[in-house]
Amino acid sequence: MGGVKYSFIIPTLNEEKNLDLCLNSLMKQTMDDFEAIIVDGGSKDSTVSIAKDYGFNVLEVEKKRPHDVSSAKNQGVKHSNGSYIFFLDADMEVDPNCVEVMNQSFKDDIIGLALKVLPRQGNNLENLMYDVNNKLAQIGNAIHFYQLSYFSCHCYDKQAFQKVGGFRNDLLACEDLDLSLRISPFGKYKVTHDTTLWTSPRRLRDWSYRGYVMKYLKYLFDYYFRGLVYEYYDDMN
Image 1 (cartoon, rainbow, N blue to C red):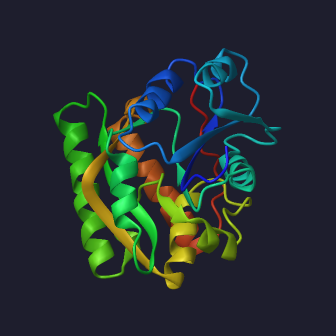
Image 2 (cartoon, one colour):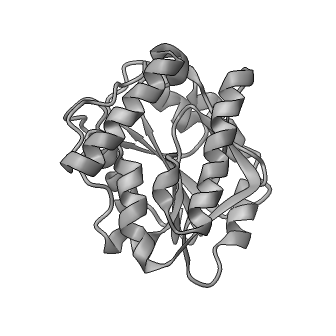
């Protein structure tokens, strides 16, 4: 598919239980000026066949290390046709107006867009945790201090993404945060709550709430004070 404005890049590994919801949400978009590229790292289940059934592009790549999403995302961008690239996890869904809101948001010198993120079928505590991070993202963006919050799955101007060399392959976690910080000098970031990105709270529940917070604090400490993240970001199966 050529001539599209937006490219959704979706890395996958054994995501047959989640991918259907994700791709179905793309099929419900109010605007169809997009493509989706599923970058699969060697799934042993029906992930690839599900993606092909939807008619989306499938790129099968070699997975060289645990949680090798940086390489997968970079490969997806190389095969993309859109002027803007949206990195979406396989366990996420987007509101039907997602592409429409992006189309309204990328004006002037906007080079990065973050959406409101909420847990799908989250409980009160989970909703509160995400609400706090959403508010921190708004505040951080307003004062140009992007380190206040940490969410992945942003949308970027493709030229700006390529200018900074894409995702770093040497980071084992925090690759999204690192890209956002490196790309921010080339234009403005925007945080919008006009559409929602719904994510699975499975990792939050699997690690426990305390374990989740502590693990991310360790990732952030390693990134800011040691320059690298040395602990693998666990794959979810």
